Length: 124
Image 1 (cartoon, rainbow, N blue to C red):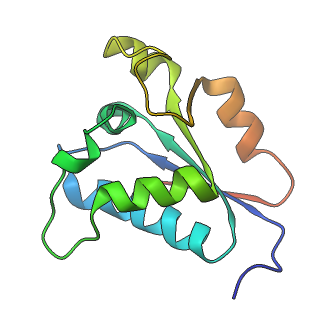
Image 2: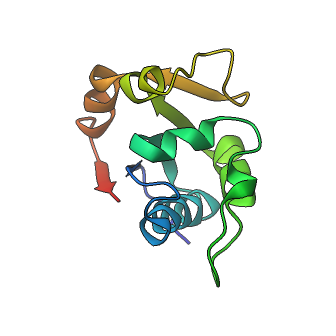
């Protein structure tokens, strides 16, 4: 459907269990785009940073929403997932703590992604 588009979609999730609908929307939009063949980069910031840890996505529930573990798995296999450096540090999360495939990076990498040719950024 969208595979002929050479664009990058950068989705920044700023909410976790503290704002479940906003969190779910970020994961849903990112995974839908990835499943459609769009190059996707999901950034976990703020409370969503906790989902970089094993088992945390399984603790998230929201009625009528797709299960977060499946969405995260799709993004790990079809896109990129990054946990914010400062957000991870504030939660004492290090590179050895996160799920395989999740990188920890900071603002410079985020800015590089959103400023790349054809990139579209959305923040939830």
